Image (cartoon, rainbow over all chains, first blue to last red; front, top):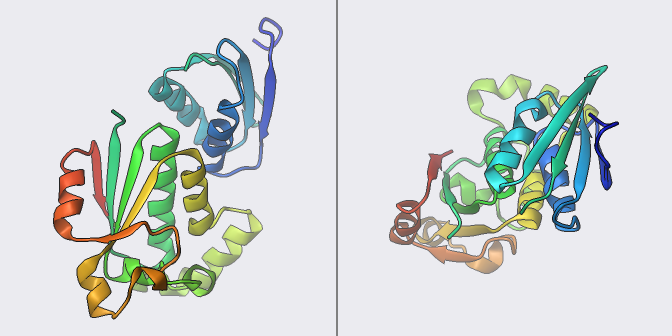
Length: 80
Length: 138
């Protein structure tokens, strides 16, 4: 996944507990241009479903997710 | 028009305040407006400075209070107050205090934290809650 997509911004939310990863993502989002790709890494296990749900609810695109040693990394494209 | 979540916050114990604050944050992150209607012990929790000293937890689980505080500190979990600030940073959070409780406790808006926007009655809350997608009583 990460090798196929150009990432414009990386957000490290590792170690953050719910609801912090979503707050961090939402705060960062206003500085992202439409069309740009954001990667966010999280260790909160709720993020597995929370970040896809957030993307769906806010009208953005989840390009994919990778998992390595308990770290979930999500790739999102800004649409809205 | 944005979707809205309305919460009646009746409790003033930190365990329930934490739950309410996480829900408020989640809704704000999902682009929803959040309405908090404080009543009874919920108002106590928003007295000026109270969030710094309030360590009450639900009576059924009183003996876990100190352990919970230690765990939260060790895992750097945000407090309910920090979550609420986070929700306000990322979205619209409207906080109203119940006029009946305010009168009963002899309080005015000045006695509460500045995050509380206004003092209203139950009808104002209902008017907003009836248009909300999600309503809760905590």
